[in-house]
Structures are given as C-alpha cells and as structure tokens.
Amino acid sequence: MARDGAVYACQSCGAVQTKWSGQCPACGAWNTLVEELTSSRPPGALKPSKTTRGRHLAFEGLDQSTPAPPRMVTGVGEWDRVCGGGVVPGSAILVGGDPGVGKSTLLLQVAAEAARRGARCAYISGEEAIEQVRSRAQRMGLADAPVKLAAETSLRAIIDGLKAEPFDLVVIDSIQTMWSDNHEAAPGSVTQVRAAAGELVRLAKKGNLAVILVGHVTKDGAIAGPRVVEHMVDAVFAFEGERGYPFRILRGAKNRFGATDEIGVFEMGDSGLSEVKNPSALFLNTSGERAAGAAVFAGIEGSRPVLVEIQALVAPSAYGTPRRAVVGWDSGRLAMILAVLEARCGLGFGDKDVYLNVAGGLRISEPAADLAAAAALASSAFDVALPQDCVVFGEISLSGEVRPVSRMDGRMKEAAKLGFRRALGPADVEKPALAYTGANRLADAIQRIHDSAWEDRK
Ligand code: TYD
Ligand code: MG
Figure: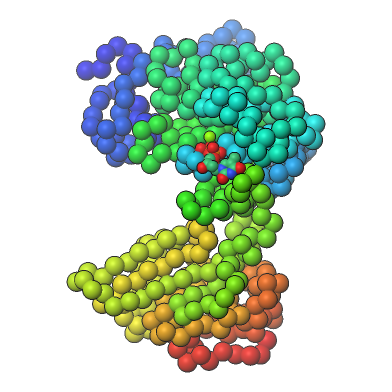
C-alpha cells in the first residue's frame, strides 16, 4: 500500500503509479520507479475560483485571420532555420542531447549573437560556474556580447530575477539541475523537472519572453528524461553528433511554429560551433577515388538536399552466424534490403559478414536511401566500383521494385552542383538533370552495377 501522498514516478517515461514495482508497467524499463511526494493538488488541476466559474467560452472560427508570429532572428543562421525563421517571443524551446554533445556551446552562441543584435538575453547555468561560462565565451570570441550571466539552480531565485528585469530570451542550462522548493523530490527527478519546466513555460507565456531549456538525455534513464516536458513546450530540438566527428546536427522533433523536419548543421571547432552552409560538401569525402562498396546517396534532410556516402563491406564469414553491423542507418532496414537482394536478385549473403556505414557520422532515416544501400552492398559483393560521378536514390519494396521518392529533381540538381554527372534511380523520371539510369526492378539495377552498363543520354 502506498503511503498517503506518495506516488511512484518512472524516471524514464514519467508515468505515475500508485504502487511500486520493479518494472515500469508503462514503458517496461527496470528499476526506474522512484517514490515522490505529491503536492495536495494533482498537476494541471484547475483551482476552483470565483472569477472563472460560469464564464462563457467565446468560440472563434478557423477562417479568422491571425498575423504570423513575430520572429526574433538570433543571427545563428542554422538555429534560426530550425526554429522556422527565428525564435518566436513568448515560446518555450527544449533542446535535448547527450552530455558533451555541445548544447551549452550552441546556446551560449545563440544568446550572444542575439544579444549583439540588440535582444536582451540571459544565460543561467546550473551546471557551470560563471568563470567557466565566461572563459568559454572568451575562447569562442563572444566576450563582448552583452549577455547577462548567472549561476543558479533555485527556481524561485530565477523566476524572481527574470520578473525583476525585462528579457527577450533566456537560456536555462539545464532543466535537470533546477529545483523548486514547492516540491520535496530531489533535483533531476520527474517531479522537479516537470515543476521547473511548468513554471518557466508559464513565465515565458506571461512575460512574452522566449525560454530555451536545455535537457540531457541519458539512455539508462537515471536522470529524468526531458520527455516528460515535451508536451509543455512549443518546440523540441534534438542536438546530435557522433563522438569523434566534428559535425553536429540540430534536428527539429516538434515545432508549433515551423516545419519539424528541418535540420541545422554545425561543425565543432576550437572556437565553438561554426555553421555549415553546404552540408553535402562536408559529408562527402571528395578527395580520392571511391572504391568498390561505396555509393553516394542523394538525400533530403529537412528542406535541403544532402549528399552522403554509404559504404558497405561484404566479407566471407568466419563464424556460423554471420555478422551484420550498421552505423548511421536502421539495422531492420538493412535486414530487409539483404532479404530482398537474396529473394529477388539471387544475391545471397547467408555466409557473409555485412557492414554498412554512413560516412561523416550522419544518421539517415529516409527510405529513399534503400537503393543506395543496395548498390553499395552489390558493389562490394561484385567488387565493382560504381562510376565516381554517380548518385543513387530510390525506395525498395519487398516485391523487389524500385519506387519513386520525393523531390527527385532537387536531389539531382544538388548533385549536379557538386560535379556529379550520373544518377541511378527509379524508372520513368521526366527530364532528369543528370545522365540517368532508371530501373523498375532492383534486379535490373543490380545487373547494371554488375555489368557496369550505364546510360549516357539525359
Ligand atoms: P558542451 O557545450 O559543454 O556540451 P553539453 O552542454 O552538451 O554537455 O560541449 C562540450 C564539448 O564540446 C567538449 O567536449 C569540448 C567541446 N568544445 C570544443 O571542441 N570547442 C569549443 O570551442 C567548445 C566550447 C567546446
Ligand atoms: Mg552543458
């Protein structure tokens, strides 16, 4: 039996249970239920008040006009792009990412650039001392920006401070370090994270101030994942990057004021993050010849075409169970492509180890990459290199067809800009921008790779 006022919150998914158990019934994670004392009122419950009781709802129509929200352009172009053209005043944005990926660096840069453009900006750190933030800013060449710094974890002090002075933009780094004295739970627990985010979002709406919350995501769920606040904020961005690669990608996961599939690309250097205006040139290894097993995929990330090399290695297996390893792509998708290659094209991988890698540390989720992955696998299996100037795109169905994908024209135009002359893709493409080899069936495409039979006409 639970004690009076005690509930058990899953630190991974935020589900609340009245009884403790070893496994969260909602998300299935183990050892994540932690006792938390609730306040007398359940979160979100309306306080009965004389002023709201009995008031009529004023309904409005969908066709009434609303002006587009004003935008605060921060000057960090890739950030503004992911926001949908700048930060909307009064909005709350959550930026999640693994520890060390560069969230603090990015947001210090955003705050500093916005401050240089005249916005009143504050950067509140609960993780680092002011001296640390300042020395980082100096290293990044931002020391002259009029950003107001504070090191504070008490929510009450932060709210009071932000109410006392007018601000346009405030960065809270990170939401897991903030604690509210209204709740007894430990900092970083679901209760505290939810309470702190709730209060800061309310302040944003009321004070017409943009609040950016930083949230660490940990895979083991030891710290309350920012997932519990995703529904409270207007936008959720994920900041991603592979260790060992300098590239960082800011990806929109939710955005009430813009498209969600937009990405911003940055490069981490000695003096902070620099924006990458042309990601294709970055992800593509242009120096040196492309060997057998490599195929250049003409992809779309957000609104931008991005070219990226997919590398495959097919090697005889030394063990009974062959290995399948994939980096930057979905392993389920690889299994599907291997099955289709075997069943529809007679290309078996049963006694072979298969490795697939997306170069540059990028993660691809587009089905349009199927044909490029299949081409890389076939190229490695036959030990026949694809033409150096060829890009590949197309979705593969289980029946072995190559299906058209979105924005084929944009993909080819980007490839043409970067010096590519040929494309391999689905059949029936009208007026291709490159010398085009079309295939209705995967087997045809694989045969062409095997025979090096490429069409030269446009
Ligand atoms: P940080 O912004 O502190 O990460 P987070 O807030 O997401 O935990 O960035 C940490 C990493 O970034 C650290 O490993 C060092 C690296 N870095 C650079 O390479 N160059 C720089 O100019 C800065 C500021 C950081
Ligand atoms: Mg940090």
